[in-house]
Image (cartoon, rainbow, N blue to C red; front, side, top):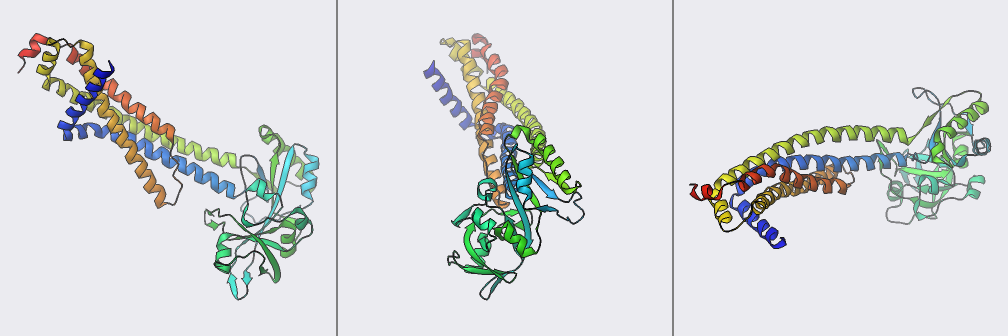
Amino acid sequence: MISFLFESIKQALRSLASNKVRTALTMLGVVIGIFSVITLVTIGEGAKTFVTDQILNLGAGYDSFIVVAGKDQSVPPNPKFVYSDINYIKNRVPEIRDVVALSPGTGDVFYGKKKFKAPIIIGITANSPQLLHIEPVKGRFFTQAEVDGRKKVALLGPTIAKDLFGGLDPIGERIKIRGNKYLVIGVTKSMGSIGPIDVDKRVVIPVTTAQNMMGTNNIMRFNIFPKDLGKMDEVKEKVRLAFIRRLGNDDFRFMTSKGLLDAVNNILGALTGFISGIAAISLLVGGIGIMNIMLVAVNERVREIGVRKAIGAKSRDIVLQFLVESMLISLIGGILGIFFGLVGAFLIMWAIKGTLIIAWWAVILATAVSAAVGVFFGVYPALRAARLDPVIALRYE
């Protein structure tokens, strides 16, 4: 049986090779259908990764939610949060695992005669590397003692470090921000951009030092990490009530990554479904094309079928021969569709500087579907060939 199957595959390949143009046109519907699905799914996976990375760069992962000063986004916020609110909220809501405080600002950075204009200055707590992935690739992060002591230490984004120091090591050097000197203790890893904001153009300092620099005790936002992610909504409600009690109003709002990511996934899912529908039509057309071509092949090879039956070939042997040929047409078309789909997705992601994420489940599914299309639409021609009367077939001209 295995040797016969191998021989059927070789014979099918010879038949396909002898009619290259017809074979290529027959495969076209399958190629277009598989190409569409692979390209879109691959781009969709890359888009999900991009959006997730952007949200993580904002410090909003699935394991936390953000409390931001200012209820109305259209009005400049008037933050009333203070550094001591970290302990306040932890004591009031024991379900909280940890809290990160963050205050943004701006100011020109000077090193000797060099100047880096208006980078983002982020005042943040010492637990940020573990919780928000603001990790140094060179040097170190500041300690809790340096936060408590309001030390003038700073980590530079890679863009600022390169602009101010070139190829020199910035660790141990001193920069000047708003008239004060800061000791450079580290360089943060590259995190790219969030929309128009280049995260690599930032200076990270202790949140208490940022309060001194900006002349205010107020803090813009807190990232709150619940102990149990399943109780996220319950913790949010307790935090809301605690801050209303502390501030005397509800002039703050919550931000979470889950809603945004779910919305993006829903949009991409709907788009994938739409394109999959178009791809299904292409596969249907391709399958009908395969069936028509196989019917033509049966008519062209009537005498061959008659000879094979006359020398002892069984109906199942004839069915298998034509099914293998039909499946090979569809399978090769599917493989070509996968190849062109991955190349197309790579070129698109390269053009937009995105990350290529190959969805292997889609590749495997596309391969299986293309083979199934060949088998499904090859059944009728194969059965028709098998039912030919050998006597009539031998007389066929």
